[in-house]
Image 1 (cartoon, protein in one colour):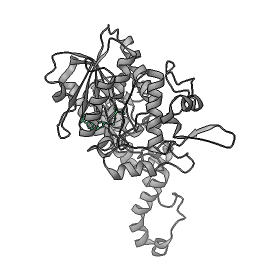
Image 2 (spheres, rainbow, N blue to C red):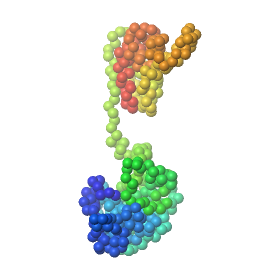
Image 3 (spheres, rainbow, N blue to C red):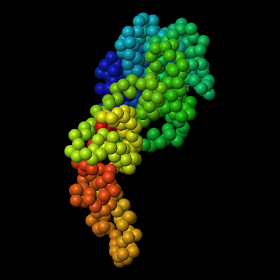
Image 4 (tube, rainbow, N blue to C red):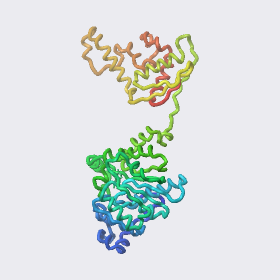
Length: 425
Ligand code: SAH
């Protein structure tokens, strides 16, 4: 992770760039991976898995007094990014008034067991249950826990990749309740997706600064991270308060909408509450100037017809003598280019009669300004119908039956052309 403003304020690396010079002098193993530029400043090749691994190991040793063994063919944890998640969790725990002796779960702990080990180093009273599916990762994790003297505080469980659950099976024998669970999930659904993401970087964007060393099981899971996290959400429905705070990282921004949707569906979403209701469109029917059918019932019937015409889904949520309320959902924009659509329709409808009475005009194309023979059809379109003058309306007697007050229609027309709003009449 770049050292940038998005780092957590307590992140040790927010304002402290690792000093390669100092680290190289202190750690001979690290020295092997740095090289000087022409000015003598030391550099590290972030695209080389070995250099990356050595940097993480050196930072963990220098800043946290931790010793880690990391295989070359597995994901190398970048320390500043992992630290960020831990600090964020500390904040969430503090906000939720969690007490002392925090118990966490790390789902997919990797070869490093970085989250539990680093968290336990930072907090004397934290303990962890870690899970892992990969044999090699499981072995290295156990070793790292032992090397850092944390066997009493971190328990690691080997779980099955084909299990339907992410959490339920792993904690079914645990009598404890947990304060939180955390997860850095496998990102991709398959190699194609992994490659597509790599290739979808725009040319204007710089190449990734560091190489990704993750193995197949570490970065690829059926259905990608969305499916992985959906399984976790499903587990949370079953486990409820057994875990107080459910959390996860997300690798791709595009994963957020389907996950938010899933939470909404299960009525577990806070996003839903923050979603602002738009104010309703309200049309108040003025007092009738005549004794025509000029009342709420007739106008709402007309509006329903217009909405049907426009393929706008409308559900009547309240139907009283003096008040009709509808919720509108527009799945697509059916109201744009009305003038063009009208002309097209008028043209189509005018065509047979034109052909029979004036065959030469039938071949004319592209010059129709809507005036030719279309006057009697104007009323077919909702907007035009109401915008047209009363003179034009006289030419549409059948339409006048339904609409006796052009101004009302015009007003409504303007209002309903705003999708996804509820309409109050
Ligand atoms: N937490 C580590 C590793 C993240 S990579 C880090 O942040 O560096 C994702 C890890 O999840 C891999 O180690 C992978 O083997 C593991 N994994 C994949 N499916 C899993 C599952 N169903 N349960 C537990 N771990 C899983």
